[in-house]
Amino acid sequence: MKATEAFLPWLDFDIDGFVSRVTEKDVERVLEKEVLGYQDFLCLLSPVASRFLEKMAICSQQLTAKHFGRAILLFAPLYLADYCQNACVYCGFRVMNRFPRKKLSLEEIQRNGEILAEKGFRHILLLTGDAPAVTPVSYLEEAMSILSPMFDSLAVEVYPMTVEEYQKLRLVGLDGLTIYQETYDRKVYAEVHPSGPKRDFFWRLGTPERGAQAGLRWVTIGALYGLANPLHDAFWTAMHLMTLKKYYPEVEWGVSLPRMNPAEGDFVQKYNLPDKQFVQFLLAFRIFFPTVGITLSTRERPEMRDILIPLGVTKVSAESHTEVGGYAEHQEQVPQFEVADKRSVEEIKSVISSKGFDPVFKDWVRMA
Ligand code: SF4
Image (cartoon, rainbow, N blue to C red; front, side, top):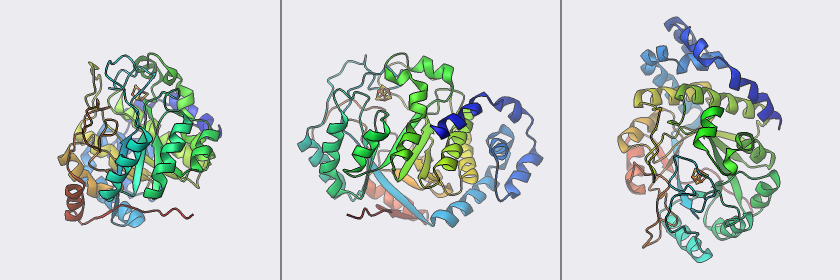
């Protein structure tokens, strides 16, 4: 675990001390630079940099156009099961929430896959809760064998696995992985994950590296904003990404900045990432990582998504259902979280086009 170990010292960095010393001149200097270091990134995250949003937006747009052109990839999540053994206090699927749990049968997987394929999707993300006893790797293998012929890219956002398990799934079509550390603040991490295997902060932290070691083509990481100090989590996410990129340059690394939405239960957020600061963070990520994909989920409100699409985003989910099998008829499962942007694929496509970008359904073809 070379990258994970190399990242650990960043968890002790004095972020607040550094940020308190940032001046307008520092931010201006950073915006003139070609290549940025970690201190430059912190300058862009600082409250002082919020006075430079317009300049940051121009810089971000130029870098995105240079490295990604005008294409924005559309993908859809498919929830296969909502069984979970963890107690994450912010999630509708947590073990103590009482509702009839569901796991899609192979026929239902086929049906949901067909519906997504009919809508035009070529990239899908498969999700489950963390319950390997109910949804073992063999179940995911079966699901992927069914879905693989229908799609060009299959990714997972499930429980952390071993290198060997990711390799097994690669053989049936897995090419990408999304894994959120949720928060890099170890104290808060322990508080919001009171029981279950997810309490193991370091096992989760090493997951993107294990995905890279298994030979996955792309890996997206991120924090869930709202659990801990957002500035800290943004900085640690970037340092994690920077370290992973250094050790595994062959992987297509990506980042996502999901903000918390209501889930089933009574979790009250202590932290917030206000809209303006959220935009600032997204721009800072783009300027610091010009070649890294940035994903925007349907957790964001339509008006917010419309503003962000031209600013540096490269991947967006559309018409998402966060309940199990939500694409097929007559499903009344509990969603993992509330989707804020409920617009159809066609509506999202037309928004992207109206901003001068090209909505695309595939940017990758799997060769047999
Ligand atoms: S966030 Fe994931 S691991 Fe935690 S309760 Fe929800 S589904 Fe389970």
